[in-house]
Length: 475
Ligand SMILES: *[C@@H]1O[C@H](CO)[C@@H](O)[C@H](O)[C@H]1NC(C)=O
Ligand SMILES: *[C@@H]1O[C@H](CO)[C@@H](O)[C@H](O)[C@H]1NC(C)=O
Ligand SMILES: *[C@@H]1O[C@H](CO)[C@@H](O)[C@H](O)[C@H]1NC(C)=O
Ligand SMILES: *[C@@H]1O[C@H](CO)[C@@H](O)[C@H](O)[C@H]1NC(C)=O
Image (cartoon, rainbow, N blue to C red):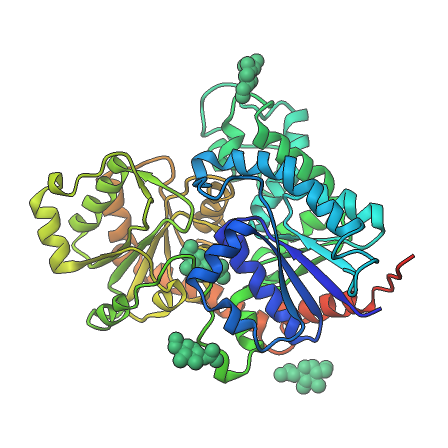
């Protein structure tokens, strides 16, 4: 039976972007791929991206949609994301099972799914895959270092390290093997700070920790040279892992030259004027600031960061996504000097083509929320980071950026104009040559991994062979 892979991403922009890149890599390798999106995500993708024209060159690619159980006008914001999980539990999970067991992906259909690749959080998919006896490979779009803290959650709870006993967030963690020397309570995923294990997010992560090792394999967006020691730890529980990162550069290395420049999956319209503005700036002089596609900050935090940027004296490109600043933001109350200085040295916009921005020679540093996708994109371009993590895996990523890879500064749990100003000056001036060297090493290792015969290149080949050699037959 011909190989037909079903990829089922978490309904958020970051994971959906990643998954589309994996889908394209598999299509290039001659595998039939269906991406299953929620109706809401699919509507936004079609409205704002060239995804259909981009994939029109792959006759072996298809989209399928599924309900997330929420009304069309629900905001699906970070603050209400637990409602998305509830909707998925009651509506999406049974609908998915029907599709797989008797519906459009089943043996009763024209092209049954032979392997399913869901997001690591979709524990329910493993039960369905086992029921119909097809292999399941999880795609973890979070960082391996954060995944490792998820996989260690049962151990952390067993040892009484989580929930935290006491309020000191600087206590070192003992039960995440390999990180004992530097991982503090405050560097664990944000929800490990809940004082109570009945929290639904903790339950979801506990399920993930139990299910991921039962899967046939795990796909990670990293490369061996970056994460060798954490990968060895993960292999102790999940022996079969495929490291195919940096995913976006691996895709570029496999695409024909003529099609390389149109890879945009953004859910917002990208402002390209910022690129011509960057052209007018000095090399490595601009701080790029973005908190990604989901995170939000309060008005006070926004104003603190803004002051810090202005006070640093360096030019800055600040992404202020619609809805990313919460609370009552009143433009007329912003101090006049802030606006004046911004007009002279800054550029504030709603959304930018991030890969192109990070690749621009004028960029000297990236103030980021430390989402894994943004972190990897920054590594690839050799841009040092100022990490202001907010939640999920970001707390872990930022600690690895500062203490393990030494390619940036972690300012987590602060939001203060003086801290921001100092961090900008450290990255662009005081520690400039140190970061120049360390970021170059990481960027070069990343480039090597995706080039011919590099580690990620080879792991993608192995993944493709494994997907094709699966001898699933409909019974
Ligand atoms: C734990 O949290 C839940 C809600 O998240 C709450 O209903 C419950 O009372 C809490 N239990 C304890 C022991 O604090
Ligand atoms: C890439 O985008 C440009 C403009 O956005 C368009 O003119 C061109 O046809 C696109 N190329 C491909 C291969 O889709
Ligand atoms: C990564 O995230 C940025 C900003 O959130 C977005 O512009 C970019 O398209 C994403 N890239 C990938 C590979 O998902
Ligand atoms: C990659 O490996 C193959 C097989 O070992 C070899 O023939 C080829 O020359 C290698 N390519 C590069 C760029 O090293």
